[in-house]
Image 1 (cartoon, one colour):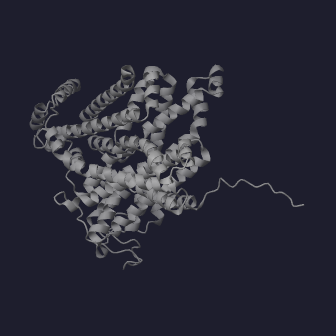
Image 2 (image 1 turned 90 degrees about the vertical axis):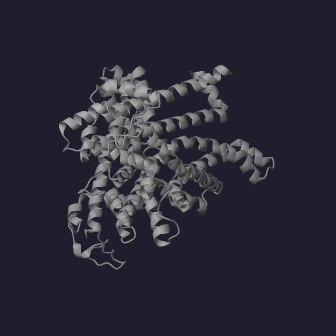
Image 3 (image 1 turned 60 degrees about the horizontal axis):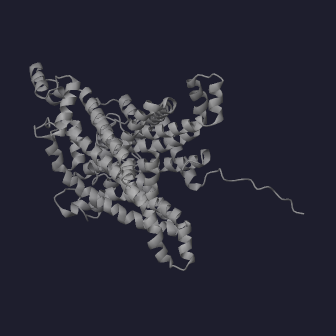
Length: 314
Length: 284
């Protein structure tokens, strides 16, 4: 049993760790090799001596390999360098913004579930009805409308025309409404489509037919047999959707003037603030990799067949 | 005795939504091709006496059908040129993405062993990262020019296309024709380019129709953030970003490009679904 679990978990953890290392290395090389931050920050009219001093101060005059080793070493101690603008530790600057981004992402993920799963399940149970068809058409819109367009349209409707909600600002509770809605709608469309197809597949399974045949009410068949089985694949979709949510957050934060990680990233990238960009990339990588790992493991918990076959093959 | 007519199969012709989608895409392509001839004004032509003029039907005149922006530039003209830029970027990038993906996928399938493991790891890494974040960092650090931007957008979806191409090559290797040509003495490159590639083209083409609208969206997103297509060139995202500043006074500046982005993305994905059903019913 223990061997089975190690056989299942081990390779996945190793792969996740390797992925993170690859990202750190690639980002480091691309970011350091691609331009001169001294020139970028001090401007083209800076004196040569000032540029030299700046490079020496930030270790930019060292060979790349040495900079890299130092970076990895420091990273293990939680030191990711200082922001080149203002000189505060990059990690602190980023972590300061994390709660604000989470304050958008967590409610929007919950909203995604609350809308997506019931809508998808309902559409599946009324397959080919007009409700099903209109829901499916709406979901195509839901995930093809880019988040920044959706956000601006919501501002146009709810702030400018109706005056119901503010168009942004993290200082008021009402300021949450539109950004959360913007982030949630796209995700809900994806979840709804996925739930629908998972549910349709489950509803055609023999155990559902058997349950109906022995006289269980339809409502109970759906609640106790079909829905729980349909939700398993939907849960694993979350790992994949998180990436979309992170990218969406970058745009949505910029639409609504929300001072989270997304806004910080755009500003830092424009200023070539290496340290901050690296911390954000690393944070995103860590989050995504652990989310995917978690989903893989959860899938194994929910579906023992997978665990057995995976352990057997390694 | 009545004559029994064999019923012709009528599956392959388009239904109404597909026809509408095809019509819209065609319109966009034509607009992009003949932009210089149909645009009523130059995209930088300023008309200060008609700043923020509303479109026809909202109090505007035929002088500026879709209204004007904050400098009195004609929104319709800018829209046509923006469509051209956005389609150009997306076409170029999709071609690169499919080409690079196929090359990497075939390489992985041909060499196997360590090369395949390393490439698969790279694919996994790319798949676990949101492209927008990667592109944002790369763009600002590598600077920005149109060729560079198109190349960078071409990295979008390479990992998906590579995975697909690898699968196709492995499947082809298991079929008789590939090993037959190989045993006749064909160079591996010939086997891949002349035999496996033509047999994979349909599937890769469908993959391209998935990649294309997504690149349109990423490009407009980056341009919206001010890190994509740079002025004086205009793209749909650039127009949305400009329209955002005048959302209360001139909503048409925002709505016109937004509508084009949404319709184009929807139309291409509807067409892609249709194409998938036609070319490769097994791909789902």
